[in-house]
Length: 381
Length: 255
Ligand SMILES: Nc1ncnc2c1ncn2[C@@H]1O[C@H](COP(=O)(O)OP(=O)(O)O)[C@@H](O)[C@H]1O
Ligand SMILES: [Mg+2]
Image (cartoon, each protein chain N blue to C red):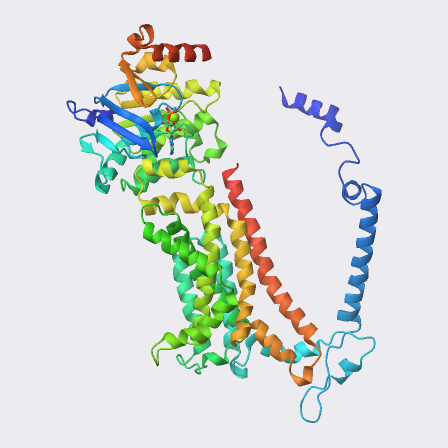
């Protein structure tokens, strides 16, 4: 068929190119999804009313009636009286203006706080680089080692002319990121090994150990593991050999996360058809070649959603170290909100914490969905 | 395809000597004895569940046998891992369900084992792979993923993938049973070409046209036993046992 003939057909039958009017478009969408029956219309209107009402009163509280700064009294202390007496009541953002550095960096020496700030940036840079498939090479491991070393140097100091800052003065966001990053970076490979071990057929001892490990750890709340790590563990260690509290919490955290992740990974391993294992065997690939080149790349892709789900859960679970006195982001927020000068403004602080947690978790979730899309496009299945 | 000639001419390629296998208490291979000479083409047929797959999978030890001896290319199959490595390099296998690696391109599917198992340099492995893809007539699909190909194309890639390891022996387990009828021919043509190049082949299939054309010998299995073993002509024109007669009448009716 010549091109002009084809064009003529298209021109003659334009209505076949797109569905009839009234099937697409925002109005049609609204009608199909929100107003398709009397009771769906009623629910839509009711929810719409509640959302708008709540939204308006939130804006009134957070913006219109908010207090942005407070005067300082003769002792140099902020005086939040105007916030307390304000009518109608509004948010007192002055608390964040005064306390944000404490919340973010804890009691790290004030004039040195650029160091933890830089660490946070390094962490974020590390996440971004690790997320780009262009960097998924062996060199990425070196980048991680370099970045984590730099973070260690910045936090501890004591070298390169940086003042030494003992670990009990660290706090806030860097602690949360350290716990989450080291936790997942070690827990994930460990979980893969445990999942593989659990499926091992010719090493029954390994299998038993992996099953016991997963079942024991999963059967215990994280809080009790953290307590054990902070209280019981030192009792078993020889005197003078006492790894610090953060390290102990970190290890408890890794062990806990790995047990959960191992079950997710095992799900992926089980979902792979047996034929994949057989084809790899028949080609003469060794166990580790088969696992690394054929099995894991497919199994892990299959479980990206539950994997990220677990990652997000653990990112937030780092806040449980509150109970063993490690000053993570949630702990510093709590301390800030219980300060006498700022009594009664916890909402503002928790809102800020919520926003920070949300940004990290939402980024993870967005990223995982992008990854899934990319992989499914490559396979075109 | 000259690599098939490297099998020593006098020693048999495959020897199964009174092989027995059980799954739990189910006896699936009963005293199976079979000798395949170098460059010989053997077609295995028999009803479903008769142990054909199990037998062929014992030859490259995807399954282990419990009694008897299996010797492949002069190496006896035991628990020794080195013997296993040797044999897996020399024996290629094509599966009913293709079993291509869906996360790798066609070319990567073909170069993976040569690069990692035979330690062939990447560029050389890719050249070889393209040669074999040309031989199975799909070089233009090299950059695609298996999921983008038709069943017949996938099975031809699977054949090319196995050939890239330069095996001395090729095993086929019902390579056309999962294909739509219009694709069976392209795969059979590839296999015929391979057979004519002198490859030693053991092929489980019910394609009697293929058996007549290329098989030196047809083996009929039933309930875990080799019941008859004969030239294709004798086998189809002059079946000796009632079991084979029944089987032939069934597959002829089915076609
Ligand atoms: N992994 C297995 N576990 C238990 N029984 C099996 C297994 N594989 C095959 N079998 C049984 O062994 C018998 C032979 O199977 P198979 O060799 O696949 O037959 P065929 O390929 O001739 O159809 C069948 O009865 C089948 O149910
Ligand atoms: Mg079978």
